[in-house]
Length: 326
Image (tube, rainbow, N blue to C red):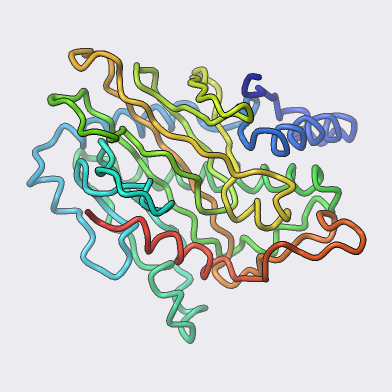
């Protein structure tokens, strides 16, 4: 079994036949694997490459310089986090060494704090960003890329809605104050052997509705746990993006669609200079107060939902609490 590669341009063009064909392909992939590779997505290729180039320059700065943008507020998913200071496998209650990567996080670029002023729990979700300003232009490039991913995530939710036999605009009222995260990950070539069980990113499932991921080519990359329990490594092409479902969408669909374990493997050869890798992912989180309850088209007659309703904010908070600083 391979990761399906789907051209979503026929859906975005508005052709009704094309919409149905794309939705059927996406539905099958979400049901069977929870991962797909998309092309025809309309993302600004030049803007994406600019973001990769500038964040690469940022990661080459001295650690003490980068630490100027380490977050000091209540939200930890902001700013710069140093190499091997966080571990995603901990979200599955696994005791493993921290991940072999460093990261710059951006949260929402629109200010929704006033809307949630009376909801203390939402404060961290809409906390102001701490965006690097070195090298010059990196902050503007990341904000522009956030906007591009934001637009594409809206398109993907339209596709998901049709794939789930619901009105195309079903999710639109639930994402106008989203608190999605942009993560710029850098996996440097390793200078020392990993500790036992230590990976570039430990095995985990994603938290939110979906993840959209761009990546550079390098040894030691993304691997997905396939239905046969084998790990499959794969690479998206230059004009392709990886999309995978998160735990929230699995919960929304009553596990009809799957949130799949994945990891980032270490390079086979420690001395491999070509193993330096970057990825930029957009983690789509709906509005903080969006209700995550079983969708009506995902509940069989006389069956009960597997999960109690929960807000998007409550769901993400539970996951973030486990992905602690190490």
